[in-house]
Amino acid sequence: KNEVEQSPQNLTAQEGEFITINCSYSVGISALHWLQQHPGGGIVSLFMLSSGKKKHGRLIATINIQEKHSSLHITASHPRDSAVYICAARAVWDYGGSQGNLIFGKGTKLSVKP
Amino acid sequence: DAGVTQSPTHLIKTRGQQVTLRCSPKSGHDTVSWYQQALGQGPQFIFQYYEEEERQRGNFPDRFSGHQFPNYSSELNVNALLLGDSALYLCASSVTGTGGAFFGQGTRLTVV
Image (cartoon, rainbow over all chains, first blue to last red; front, side, top):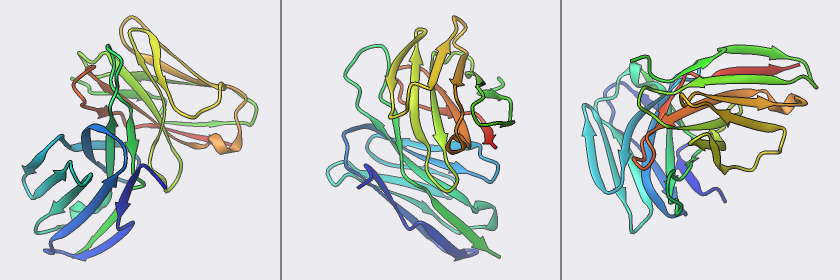
């Protein structure tokens, strides 16, 4: 079992729909990242969460530390939201001077149709 | 601020050859991590460099090695290339202790 699991793997939505992508993790974390990857490879960081909820435009990310679960929501989806969304857990690191590595989920491929 | 820059963007190598990939971190960032992303998969952690030392390492063979320079830039070296090393190699930089991560565009390595 992977340490970071995402669902669904693939998601097709109509423009305007509300979208939810889920992420569960089994390791201790210092932070949880939501990332966006477009064809060609570049990754953009959307959110970094350690508790609660964050909102940026039409994107909302939540995390429940007790349940080890996070969700990414997209309101009023648009074709330009089509991308791969990746959840990554920042592992806890006990040694001073550096930080835990990122453990990635496999990603959710989102396609929004006009 | 140029952000995280990686070079080259694309590379084709033959099995058995050696390759060096380069990463310049975002200005002010002191920690560089390297990831390998196979097609259709999430990135896998290779190693992390801080203060010119390898601080952490993922489950990759010794053929994968790296270096960090005093200006915080980093190199990833892969020896004795295998077909299975074909992947997108991503560099991420951060300020240690902050938990953040800024990614480069990646280097697409094809081994033939």
